[in-house]
Structures are given as structure tokens and as C-alpha cells.
Length: 498
Ligand code: NAD
Image (tube, rainbow, N blue to C red):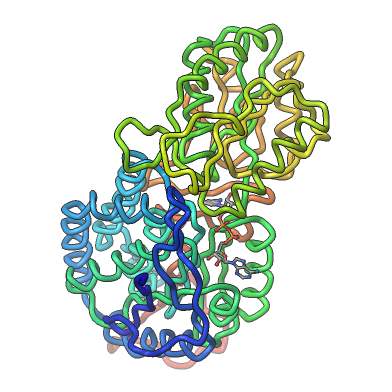
């Protein structure tokens, strides 16, 4: 007998019976842990209707009251941080410490949204013309949809939900069907923080639920995070239906190591960023570009470190890397290891043979390292999204940057060097949205914004931070004149700024 995970609509668990459901696995044991309801169109409509009903009162709730809800939520999520991390680990598989880190990064966005009264201030120009004042205000879009991927089941929903509701919108969140429980827990904590019913709703499911949001006439904005083909589809479908859409897609992140870099620091960084969360991060380092002559020494250092990585059940003490999210994903990643071998890359470490501290039926794959990877190989061209790290050799700095700029993705990148001039040149020249200098995973803090370039993002605004506020509000400019007895009667000329 397994548990059931259902929608959260209008401030409570949905009481209906779903026509379709899906399995939610414990990836460390391979067992079905729960079944999740898959929303039909009518369930999506129910959630949107709840959000619409809640909208008029919520958008006119004072900034002070909205901010107080956010502070209360901040307090609650902090208190329940370990519980939320345990939920993430149970369904995603990442180790507990990593899950706690995810929750910590999520909290940054809540803290940002706590400042909403100051953040939503508009401009005011007194006497723009004689006795005419001009001022701007930012108003919510209305009902917005948030669609999130499996790999950050707590953080990605919280990239969007706090800013969306702090700005006065109401939300329907559709998390990944692979690890849906974190979103329900977040909705429950928001309810306990005093968020009125209907302001945040959660529907579970697949394409049917996503299409229901994309095509619903009352949904005004869509924030999406997931793979590039689906991001493109969501952007095109949502905008065709008249919505504002931001759709963040996949990645192939390169880490350049220049000859003057500290190679121990670079090797530590490559292993952490390549294999943390089993490589299931959109900011994971997937390709290390070793600039001559450091390749051999760097590969040796990375290989040594991989040998010591402890792969196992994320709940067990000492585990550093957990399983992959599903058996199908594990098989897909394994097929890339097979392809790398057959395409001629040098297999330095074979993750298929790594020792595992966990149940045999879990979705395991150890860390793999390829060397001498070239741009036509599928391990290079495709986003693998698993524990497979490739090393490509470059003769010069220019070759390394050329490789990155030729890549269709542009999410994150990093350079390891002790040369400030080279680092500065790199940040200027590289066509990527987020750049690290001796920092392998440059996820911006909550008061900047997150977003890639090229095929890593469709739309004009990045996620969270200042861009998040822009996305979730529309600007209105008011030009106002209060007549006084001196007003001068009819004038058919164009209004002049005298
Ligand atoms: P995914 O694209 O399979 O799913 C994302 C969401 O879209 C889920 O909610 C899913 O239910 C829904 N979906 C799946 N197929 C759909 C379809 N055919 N039509 C409509 N909706 C559909 O992504 P995933 O496997 O859950 O997550 C991993 C991907 O997300 C990777 O590509 C990763 O790079 C990307 N990602 C990107 C960022 C970023 O900020 N750029 C962050 C995290 C993850």
C-alpha cells in the first residue's frame, strides 16, 4: 500500500478522484513510494478558478500584509528545513546535505520577497508639466502558472512563487511528476503562514496539466524551467495564447582551466560541480576545457578524486552522491557512457563499475570521466544530465572560448586562473548568461537574477531577483492634473511640457 499525493487547490488537499495517476519512486531503493494524481483539464480549470477568485482581494492586500506573510513563511521554512530536505532526498535521491543546500538557496528568494514594499516602489515626477504630475506603478499580471523540473523540487518552485505572490499575483504551480511532494509541503507552509486560500494552488501531472495552463485564457504569465525542447514548446505555445512567458531550458556548461590555475582547486571544483547531485543540475559542469599543457596533470587529479567518491543512499551517513531520479534516466545516461566509448573518447573512469552503498534495486550509476572528448561526439553535443564529466583539450585560450561560444547552450560557465586580466577578458567575451571566476557553479544570489543565453532561455526576463519582479508585474504610468481655478480652457494642440 503506497501513499497518494494529490493537488492542493483553494487552501486544501483536493478531494476528488483522479482519472490518471503516476508512480513516484524512491530512487535509492527502486521501490514505488507513492502515487501522484495527474490533473485533467477540469482539475487545472478548478485550480485556475480558485486562483481567479482569490485574485481581487490578494492584489489589493496591503504591501505590509503581503510582506508579513512572506516573513512568516520564511520563519516556517527555516524551522522545517530538515523536513523539506528529507522530502527532496526521498523522491529525488540527492544526498541530504545537498538537499539542505537546495532549501537554503530557495530561502534566499523568500528573503528577497520579504522586502516587497521597498522593491515595488514606482517613480514620481512632480510638475512634469505645470500642475501635472507623472507617476508609475507596478501591478500584478493576475493568475500565473509556474512549471518546474525534477532536479530542484524545492528551489525552482521557490525561484518564482515568493516573488509572484509578493507582487500580488495568484499562482497555479505544476511541479515535476517525478518528485511532487515538496510543492505540497511548500503550499501547506504558506497556508500556515497566513496566505489566503486560492493564492497558491498546486496541480500535479504531465503534458495535459501543462497544456491546460498554457491554453487557459485566464492565465496571464508562465514561468517554466525544464529541458530545452519543452522550454521552446512552452514559450511558443504560451506566447501564441497571448501570455507573458519565461522558459528556462537545458545546458552544457564548460569549465575552462588555464595553465596558470591552481590545479588542485580546479580538480576539486570539477569533481564537485560535475558529480554533485549526480550531475542532475542545470549548472553542473559537463565539460572541462583543459588549456595546454595542463590536461594530463588535471585529468590525473580528477581521476584520483573520483576514486574516493562515496556513492550511496542519500540518507546514509557519508554518502556524497546519490542515485539518478528514475531507472529510465539512469539507462539513458548509461547509454551515453556506451556511446562515448564507441565514438572514441578515452574512458578514464567507468561509472558503471563504481561501488555503491545502497539497495541493489536503486537507480545507480557511478561517476564517469572521459578524456580527449571532441565536439562531434554525443557526450559533447548532448545535455546528459548525469554523472558523466568530459575533458576536452584546447591549445589556447582563444580555442577554449571559441568552443564555448560555438555551443548552442549558454547557461553557465567558469574559468579557473590566477590571471585577473584573462578572467576579465573571459567574462567580457564569453556568450553565456552566468559566469564564474574560480567558482564552478555561479548561481546568482537571490537579489540578482538567474538565466542563461541562447538555447538555455526563451523569453526576455531571467528568473528571480529584479528580473522576477519585472516578469510578475506590469507597469502603469499615470499622468495627473488636478484643476485649479487658473486652468485655461480648451486647447486642441498636443500637450506640451511647458
Ligand atoms: P522536462 O523538460 O522533462 O520537464 C519539465 C517540466 O515540463 C515538468 O513539470 C514536466 O512535467 C513538464 N513536461 C515534460 N514533458 C512535457 C511535454 N511534452 N509537454 C509539456 N510539459 C512537459 O525537464 P526535467 O527532466 O524535469 O528537468 C531536467 C531539465 O531541466 C534539464 O534539461 C535541465 O537542464 C533543465 N533545468 C534548467 C534549469 C535552468 O534554470 N535553466 C534549471 C533546472 C533544470
